[in-house]
Each structure stands twice: as C-alpha cells, then as structure tokens.
Image 1 (spheres, rainbow, N blue to C red):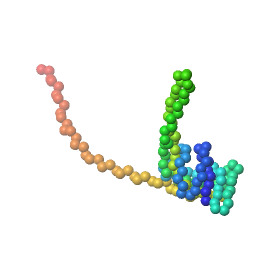
Image 2 (tube, rainbow, N blue to C red):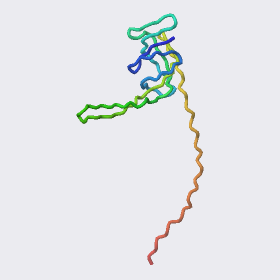
Image 3 (cartoon, rainbow, N blue to C red):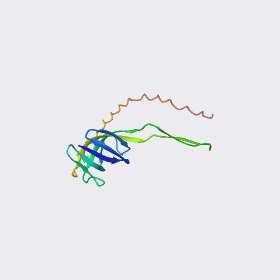
Length: 142
C-alpha cells in the first residue's frame, strides 16, 4: 500500500518502512508524528483520491533525526550597476521513517518514547581541607 502525502508545501509518495527527508517538523528523535494531509491512497487493485484530502486517512511516522540540508548560494547581480549580493542558505530538515498507513479514521498505536538512561550518581571524594592557620595576633601597645 502507498500514500501520497503533503507536508512542507511538497508532495511525497510513501509506503510502509520508507525513509523520507521532509522540511522541518517538530519532534525529537524517536517521537512519532501523524501526517493527516493524505492526497491519495493506493494498493495493487484500487486507488482512492481525495478532494483535496482522503477522509479518515493518515500516515504515522517516526522521527529518525533532525538535520540540515546542503548550503545553497544565493547570488544576485545587476550588470553595469555595481550591484552584487551573495547569501547562503541551509534548510532545516527532518528524516522520517514511515511506520504505518492508516485508513478509515483508525488511530496509530502510540509508541512509547525511548527513555534515556538515568545519569550515574557522582561519587564525591572527600576533599583534603587545608590546615587552618591561626590568625596573626595584633600587636599590643605597651
């Protein structure tokens, strides 16, 4: 089964276990994301298209990582006008792994977020305290 989804102003054809790089979505690595903008569903025998979206269909995916794209150079110039501008741009991206394609309004089974290992307790060594020297005595006037 495949689905055509819309996210970030672009359309992607996805199937189960596909890895897709899309524009940045909120979520840390390991979090699950539901993509509700499904434009088309299909399998070997039939295809369902939406107007504009398929009712009750969604795609659940897991965030693999948050990354950034390659640098794109933006160069503007007007000849004979001494006008030149150079900028660079790197797009924030999210790598998704499609876990399931849901139809008929079914809900995805939410995967428990991966727990990080508890930090190890620090064992503090007793510090050798500097010997306290007696304060110098003030001179007594005779």
